[in-house]
Image (cartoon, rainbow, N blue to C red; front, side, top):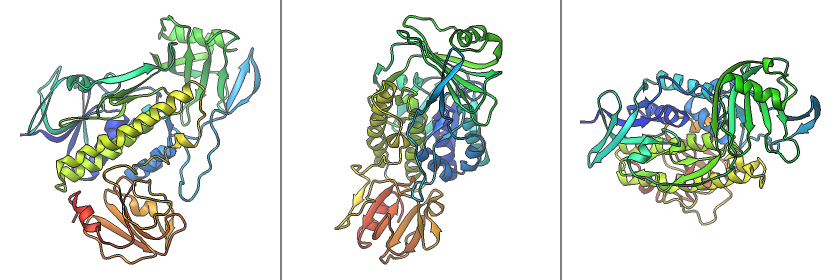
Length: 466
């Protein structure tokens, strides 16, 4: 007997997103977390526009917007003098089709928002459960813990970070490289005498690598400090050492750092798991791919792993889809993760800028086995593409998409009443989509298109929707 249909290991953004998506589908899931509470730092602070769309669908967009703000422009400093602005990313304008901009929210706050939404939907988190081993059989998965009884589930999802205990337990390899050989410090600090209008940047002296930045964290009184050190340095995380680094590299004094709230050291690397599925176990987020923080791709790619997997687990567990359908998770997400890893690495090394590719709006699944483009003359939006926002006869499309259902757009053509679980939106030919039938998946990607309804029923039957 299983204790829960789905066991999610790790209460970071990945695990919490998956828990929310399953809960709103009526699929019970338990999230277990090794620590006694949520992660306390700001680490993954950048939310890309595609992730804002996901959060819109999951019902947390308003809280995310209220809890953060826009990225500030960089300001270069030398010897206490401002040298001028430094723009880290190309400007991006919102449109009707892509209505959300990138947003800065400290990771600890994003996680609290997601936790609150999960609990609102009836989901639960069990803290202090450190996983030690995973065993599988044909009926389910057993998770073993350092303390407390084992738990049984039909499926287990590893969302337990780059040092994933689940990944090691199932024997999945991870291939990667150091993106930067130099150690780095990231900390959340409070600083007196430094305005919050700029992302303050203190470049290294010529011939040295020891830069430091202080970024005001929107919606808080805090700054995120990032500092790089020379090779071989042992990074001291004590509050006094953090204060001394600020004093040595800026015009501020050590006493100006009034609080050190959290500190961590890391060495940027890029790594990709050899597989994203091992039997009844799935790898998601940092357990499947580890990014340099440059470009803000790690947390966002992780959230979208969960968003891709959630509706598929729901189709199998709640709608009766064939379990082999779950193979499409690795098929779709591993290729995306590989692309995003390459982008993060190029940005870190100065070979690319933050811009359109980092927004994750152009990512899609045209080559997926789930994408069926049957029109004789496909337009710009095709099967496998993200379904853009817009208006059809007064209906906002993102409003129509919001929820765990499928959506059928009938644009400039007739369509029959769809089966239960599919919402129908009728209207004239659309300036973005063109003409035809567009079946939008629960995760906001076009799954099937057609000039006529022929083949639509057979396509939906694959997912338990008839």
